[in-house]
Length: 212
Image (cartoon, rainbow, N blue to C red):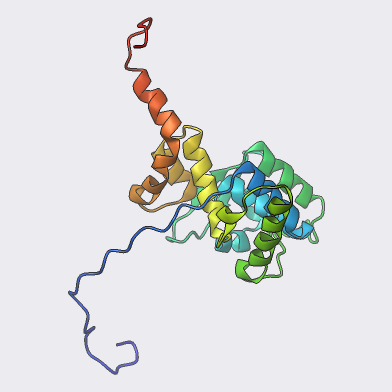
């Protein structure tokens, strides 16, 4: 239609097939350590920030020092996937990483300097090799590395959401922090909080009542 070869979309009105949701792949702490060790040192700061902020790869690439407010402890994502600005709080681990990067800036007077000077335009150019090395590390420790099969950089975003849910964060908060457009996207992570859910229903039991 854009090129003028047809006057209407021939599939207009045809219902879309429902697609099954992909697996929720997230890192355990042991797997995180293995992947971090496998990455080149220059890419480790971005890896740590991804785990603690849920930023997408494209959002990392566009993040400028002007978007980092150390005083308020907030990162501003000016162009997210859905075209909306969002602000992501920094935890102490992210603060430490960014403070270290700030001391090594190439252009400290330039607010438009990228935070992460990554030479790779796509994570697929380096991350699969790091995952393979991480699997070898886990195997040498006698651990099962199969959970990392097919793990991608986007899995760090899954890890961010999964850990928030498992720590007891409500889904609305997770949605806001990660910039998901709908709550249904975040619902994929809700089954990971089984212990938290059990604790919630246990609050219905009158205080002092004996079990059994």
